[in-house]
Amino acid sequence: MKGRIAHYTQLPFEVPQNWSWTTLGKIGKWQSGSTPNRLNKDYYNGNIPWLKTGDLNDGYITHIPEYITEKALNETSVKLNPTGSVLIAMYGATIGKIGILTFPATTNQACCACEVFKGIDREFIFLFLLSHREEFIKMGGGGAQPNISKEKIINTYIPLPPFTEQQRIINAVNKIFAQLDTIMESL
Image (cartoon, rainbow, N blue to C red; front, side, top):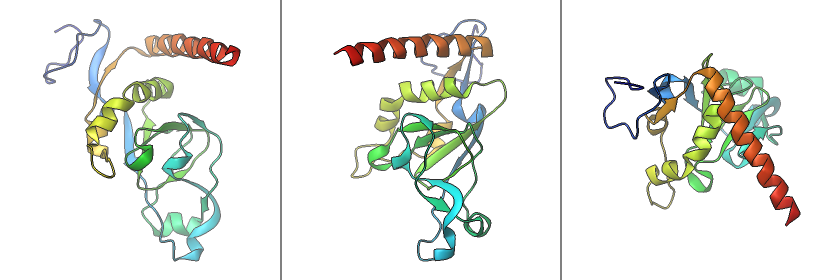
């Protein structure tokens, strides 16, 4: 089975021989965030960035306006995500919004973070999530507050090329985005 892993069934398409099918759950460590109790004033206005999904910008995250304390990190289920983590909003008006952390940060429970494993380019995962936003929104259903779970995210299939091919794809996409930016600025 060229470019396939035998235990996966109903794959969307055939991939080149040196690529493989996997799931998002196998390319990194995924975890959702938490909101420390707002009534506990000792948990807020500290020095640890705390991202809400409204802070996601479909790019690199360079600023987060809200902070929590070490006490909140130590006493609640909040987790610190390392620099380079890829984030995706799981529900509400921001469902499918994404970002990449440029510094360690925590997130609220509406956000899922991926600490990408070695050999996987975080920008490749970012672009994959960006390209699949509509699919994630459809997965969320049509209720008052669409919702995609961490399980739906980590069970999503991804065609994974070798690392050098990931980088070639990233460079090609970024070149096209730069051209689009130039066109938009000239309008």
